[in-house]
Image (tube, rainbow, N blue to C red; front, side):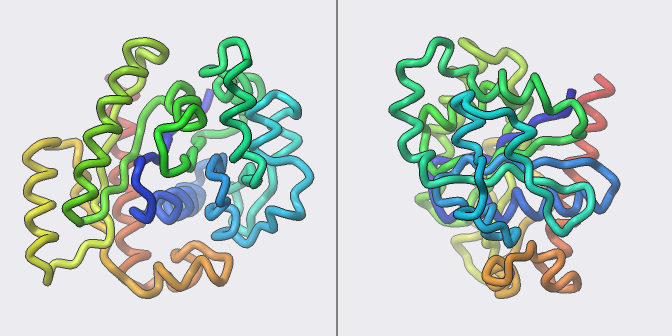
Length: 259
């Protein structure tokens, strides 16, 4: 079975999608077979990879609700070894539809267990909320990567997320762990950035990745071209940061598997 990592934070605009698509791209370049499941109704991960959500006949919505198989929804990206299950605006209604389902928290886990054996890694791009959809992602996941914007209010959202990770670990998924926290939109010229970094590293210790993701215009431009920044401008500081981050993620994975 593949290792499953959820990219989650209840706050929007912190770099979840950018982190997901660029880690996936770097993993694929390293020879890993990677699948992204886009669970955000906004579908930014799909857009970031140049996938037409409206043109997709099967999406993560149908997979989540058990209407279609995972393999029916998989779309290949332009990156070898990297495929995706695109999002759908219908996911906004999935929350209501899941409520009446038996074992509703395990819907995604069951869908992935049946047909995801050919992947090394599955990355789940979660919506910016602690919804039943996010709960499904955390129940299915082995670990959670939390992108954290270097701003004061971002610290409030992460506290609630950690509390929910612990609740889900206790009640649904004993193997769930905080894989790591990645600082995004990092500006070393800003005093607030340094204050946030100090607070986060003091609280989470080694769980915070050494690599930080800088504020970089190329990262912002890349989605409009339907490309991860690693393909849009490989030499920019944002691309090099995501390469470094992915190396850390894979190193941590090797250490976890060896334990």
